[in-house]
Length: 307
Image 1 (cartoon, rainbow, N blue to C red):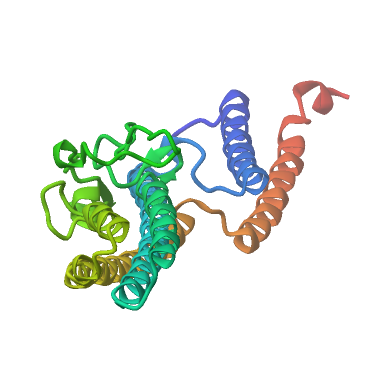
Image 2 (cartoon, one colour):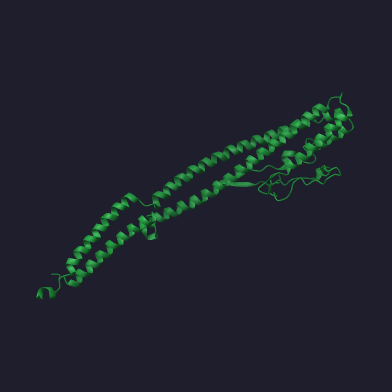
């Protein structure tokens, strides 16, 4: 028959008190931090899922940031192409006006001056920057794509245009897992290469030369080239619109994914306050009961019975 000694009762009492105090401390710690996972030992399996959710959320945040940057780039490109279209449309109106044989040379000279100003405006547009990056020079966005020398009158000298080409590299944005999207346009694609008959700067130079000599036929001959370049601009804007729509769909998808991952992470890591408060009260009562019972077990001694 097992003999129960005072030391055995004291040891068992302390063991139970420590266990109850530890459980109460864990509950209080979860209430204080608002998390049920404070150490890996709290839930080894839960920690694995928590780390996975955190990694996926971090990746999702980076994709979201890339999507926002891509949208900014696409919106700015569309704005710049809109400005380009306005310049080309005005150039066409002037070309139609200058095709009239009844215009005096003074009218041709006035139109030529406006054409020169339109060319300067278009060069400024072609050298547009977003966040310090030239948008029409591919991967060489740190270099000015249309850096023409100046004539004595302050206008740009585009005689070297035939040897000028912009960088053709594509700027790809990672907008999802294994999803790369090019978001830039090159100056050569938009404004034409130096040898293209519908290169917009060549068109402007040809119109200016024809206006100088009053050659209305030469001006009229550029109308088809203007229309050809305008069609390219409109096609580019349509492509930008399609990419923008896809990027916005990706943005919505990433937002939904972020919400789902956050909910899963919350279910894995966050504490249940209502349950914890109830458990805390129960554990506190159990601990107090253990102390009360222990005081009755430890209190009697041999001296108490010899009195």
